[in-house]
Length: 148
Image (cartoon, rainbow, N blue to C red; front, side, top):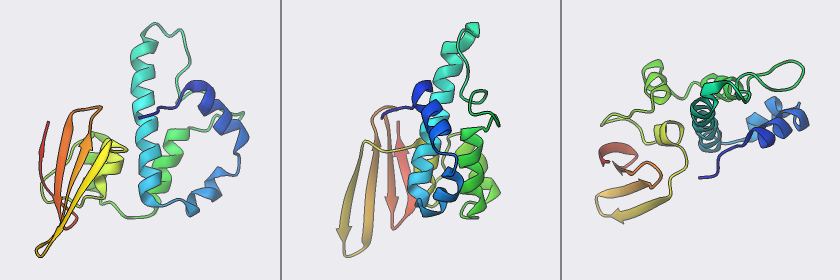
């Protein structure tokens, strides 16, 4: 998975002031992938930034000091696709059996691979997240199990 670097984020922020209106054209899955990339980058920077020698993603930006991560979160939440309970799980990067598979891109980001099986009983998928070692299994769009 390619994470954002501070330089890339700065250029995205400074070069795309109209990005809020562009969100409407993005699908939920792509919004979630980008949101998760930003969450992971923030965690990476927080760990690296223990000595406060570099600036954090939440504190840099254009002159209005917009919070790129908060903007993605606000856009995803504005679509009313996830319940408050689902959003709490997304924020803590957790999942539950019986949840809709649509939560996976927001909770875990872009999978390394999705293996799909179609048979007379429906559609089964295995979402592979190599970076974390998670394998999540779904049947007809509902999370049925996982291993890590």
